[in-house]
Length: 444
Image 1 (cartoon, rainbow, N blue to C red):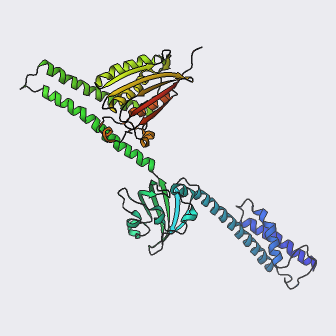
Image 2 (image 1 turned 120 degrees about the vertical axis):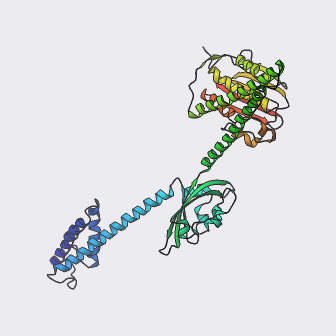
Image 3 (image 1 turned 90 degrees about the horizontal axis):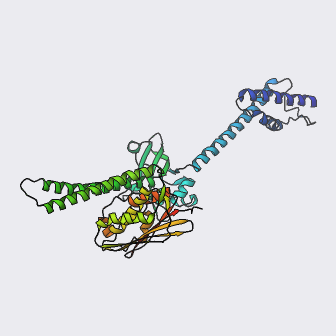
């Protein structure tokens, strides 16, 4: 009898392994599962080659069909276990992808209760998943339109019929984070519906589009300012030219000269606007090619002052450079543009006049040039935005001053291209101080 049981066990081993490998040949690691599962099946039926006890009632002599059935069940059990293992691995893989997605992903049920909330959503909203799971999503996100309308109330796709929103729905709006900040987002809803069209679940993809919205706002601001900057001088030029062209008037020489000076001045302004647009385009495209040569910055500063003095009768200018201020290897045309922008800003933003000082010092292997005015100053909250494209001081009189907000962006780009940096210190109603520094290595 012992021999009989050993024969049965060996037969199950052989037959089940053969069936398993035939049905699961595409699993490269199937063999490693065979022994343990076969031993499990054999133990269920009391068959073990190591046992010396007998279970004559377990098998019927001469019944190979019974052995085949048991072996078939062993193969099926092992295959099911393998499939369950693969499903579990795939589930973990999908969960890891969703958890570490660059976009925020959450799922909600038909009652709009949050079922899942990935790590990007946590960073985006400031809420941990433990704070939001089981809560109503509209109380967490508080999605609103640009006009302040509550989109979670009026346009939630989970509440809409399938004819209104379909299986996917996209909308943009503003959400409120846990700490009270507002973030521009694009939300894409993928809605799972019942055969009757009722929503069961929804997966919501949330993307932060604040930077894109900011760029669009900058574009609109730029077009608005550019239109103003071009329209004003063109209107003046056209007005004077039309007046001088009238055949029913005889203009004296002084009137003609003054009119032509105005036309020349406005034309120069147009040229400066176009030049700065082109220079800003070069800077944004990458680091410009620098044509460096030794330059005496005090001489360059005096040239800039002499040119810009014609803009004002209310300001005095002072140059204060160290007597041993060295020649500095820079691109003269670009550094002249930096000085001209800073001095021109000092004139424009001190409308009541005052002193404008350009000073220079050598310290710690770098030269430092500072332009100081006694103007309206800059609010502390706006200093960090000064050197961005199209940024302007948003303060009363400052909004009426001509400009497209590119001057300081150009200054920063040029100085950084030379390996330096630019900083500002300002007090409202007392004036501003802009300092740029450039690396300098004395020649041995």
